[in-house]
Length: 379
Image 1 (cartoon, rainbow, N blue to C red):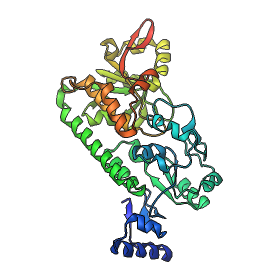
Image 2: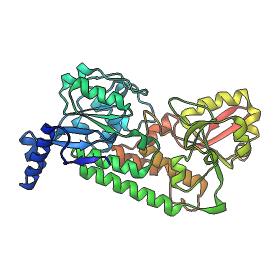
Image 3: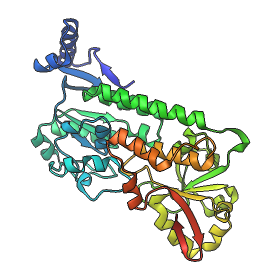
Image 4: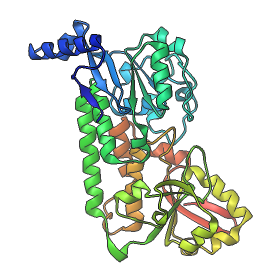
């Protein structure tokens, strides 16, 4: 299991460090005192790698979307370099980008970044003298290469836990990274906040035959897609006990389906990812007859919500979307919830910004989708 380890590693030098740290702890030395004496700790990251790093981290470089989790943990003051992607015009789906914009504008660039796990510029990283590199969304082989080429310890955070949105694993990841970065108290607050939201969603959920069949389409996944892009066991729908018709697919996760499959399922409600709305509009112009056969389209029960996948998973957006789904699917138990207001409360806790207005301006807010002779519109 990932976490801090003080058991002797294989290498004698690191074993001696670990032993000295144990002695220091036994003497009552604080982490700051240990840091002053130049001591190091050994951690087990989420790839199962033993990583030796300074007892106190003062300078970090985040890679592969790790800046998001650094933002959640209120550790932006530690960041000394960023990927070029973090400086580019903000994708509306990356709420944390609003919080970091002023900070990253003046930071050095250490690589291109972006999906696909591109390797950074090793020399640029070395020149910044970071204590630690935090990596998310990279291949294990890339993580090892970066550490070998730079000589700087790399902590790997398992983005698979974030992508599948397993809240238990997400809490574990945030807790571990919080301890590594000296933000344990903030990590505990995040865990408590997530716990509260999860329990509230479960309390409001409705089970049994009362649940309408729901299809979530146009899901963003390594790009923008049309209505046939969906996901089995779609996390925000699962959290509020919704009935996802795509759960009939044996394999959980993202999948492209045939239009015939959607007609066969013929869901009561369709919810679309705002990132794929242009694709849906294009498809409707080409094949309106397909859409007009769908029960949800004929009944006016098609909705749109923000994407939560943008340079990996944005946990805060996924949690906000669960409340929107609750509002449209079981309005009686979510009667006191305004989705935009709730989204802002969640965004502010995670990122320190109220961002729902930003989503609305970018046409990424919550709304009802109308299909008619004029095309596809959102209200």
